[in-house]
Length: 320
Length: 182
Image (cartoon, rainbow over all chains, first blue to last red; front, side):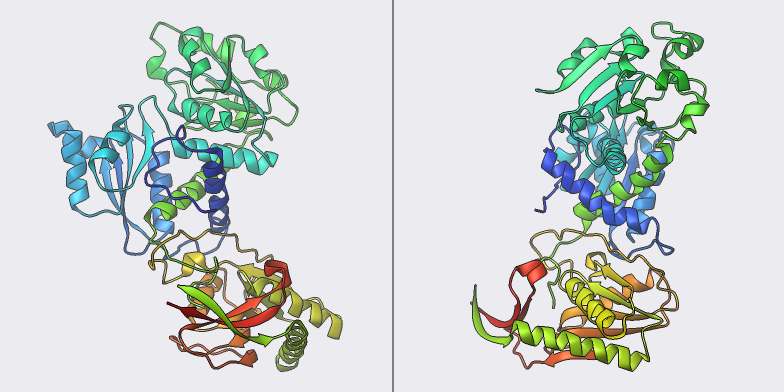
């Protein structure tokens, strides 16, 4: 059963069926990553605007790679080079982009809700590539794809998320997504980074707040480590050494999780801070699969939102 | 718009006999099966290619590699309105380089599906030769494409549709000529 997606603003509003459809539609694109010739002409003549009002390396490159492999052209807007620095409003900037006639806009912004605002004001599909502390839907989808490939299912897993939950849009999107599949989620980190409100982020979500990492890891099927944002270390003061001591994911601590627990990290990863290099490079680490899957998920989303569609009686042969 | 069934073009027995004949013809014209590989085009080319391979195993005892190709991403007519296509994976568990490939589909009509399939195929490598095998050729080509192996040629009008129904997909086994009535 195909679904239509007008925008891709967040995971919260999606149903479990829609999420599974997106993951299924990513499978053919995973396969294309293994082809000797990775370039399709499916979106030839289409233009994807990449509007990154906040710095990003991997997400921007991942979307750009996805667009290129589908044959689409790109417009690039980057924070440092943009007229925002000169005082132009967000709406004026995106209207200017829109006037150059892209077929969709992929957007990252430091303000939560900025992509929703743009979606309401432009007649153009908007893909959220991360907004403030709100959502990062494509990251949660690529994480889910990675987990499902390794585990065969998303249903009923024990997932532990470690680190700065308060400021993390990755954590929020993942909690929304995994909750829809009945996962039990444990969030763990220094108390000021793990707000009590996270336990009631979504109706019916089983989210547990734990302060001690040893308790949080016990029985986990999946451990997600978040990047410790160094710039946040001082608010209120928390020394990096203290974080390493109490919250670093080490091989010893990982042993508390299930023996085959998966380790995920959205990157960029700071070795020796939130994660021990032995874990980052260990057999349970899925970090590089996540990156590869990211391109596949973004190709699927761009295809679903940008490709013109066709009618068919038989789902495989419209013309024949 | 209604769809009216006009007449039956093939019975289950005729489909089976045609597949046996096509398999024998492919082996004969290829001088054996040593470098041969079959690729079924989704959806109904897939069971057809498997049945042809099965028949080849029966004849010469040789196992011919079989793959499946989903052509959705290579279509040139995605823009013809309405529902979004559902993508499926292509599964080609062998290298196509230097292989003697036979593409298998149920009906040859405009030739656009085959053009798309060749684009998809050449993204995977460089086959030595590519030929096409179809159960039904109904005419009305829009591309310079012809099949090397044809089960049956059928004269049709543009309003008519040839429906190949196979047990694996449709839970019945026959070929029907139907017509769109506005």
